[in-house]
Length: 287
Image (spheres, rainbow, N blue to C red):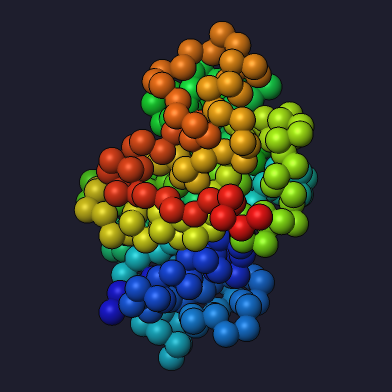
């Protein structure tokens, strides 16, 4: 059985990842500051990821709880801009990610998947994207301290994998994560009445269950080195066709290929091709 440490396993995406991995035969350890939900199928250890010593111990084994780790899924972070002052966000997120990468390298753990972010693509797109669907081909465009931190993490990953070419560091640029209940609570059908409410991320989102699928596929891939993947649901939050949205709200932005129906404008073609990512969940099935 493969033992995986999931940092941030008590968060929204983390809960889905822990459940999915456990259901597929992994032994999961949840490393977080927040306690897990009742009944979570994982051991839990409270760890401060900004303390390198704690991270090294968490990835090597803690007392009689477990010994040795095969892979790491690093999701723990201050999850969005504005939740904390900018310096605190940067200091927490970048330092924690450095410590996870460094500890994995020191301990010989060569399978690491972590949460990058759609924000590196240029969100909130007050400056229009270079083309649509947006993808991994253009240089990152951080527009906030949170996003800048994610860009720094991706650059760190390039160098960690340069130092150890057998190391796999996969950054998943998750879109806005949603649980099933969010589709009703956030009023997804109402976005159609005011497209500007969700223009900031090209009307994208990611169902937590499909986010968990992407994590598992990344863990199981035979890739090495650093790779980044945009991870989004297969559709937008809108009922207006995507081609019409682009024409109305981003006139003049090149459209690189024909857009079909309400397909996502956060390009997931690379994830489909290299990871076998095939998202199945849509908000339309739950409202």
